[in-house]
Length: 84
Image (cartoon, rainbow, N blue to C red; front, top):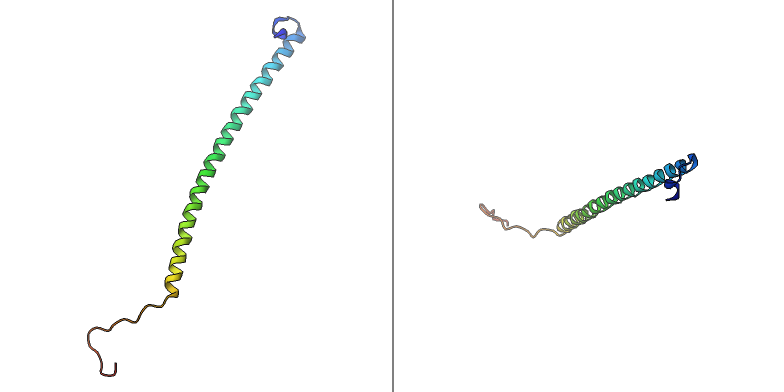
């Protein structure tokens, strides 16, 4: 406050420096919040992808189990030879 009241070259220089520092701080804070928001978006996307991957692996496991179990023999329809 004193640097803005005084009228010397040094006071003007100090006042300019203070204003520059506060503007840089404000810019840094806004930049960091933007980065933080972007990180949150990426986290949400990755959470959704993890859930989707779990579903895919679950279906793959079910298919593998289905292949491991042999199908019961099917009953023939139509013409049946005498030897069966």
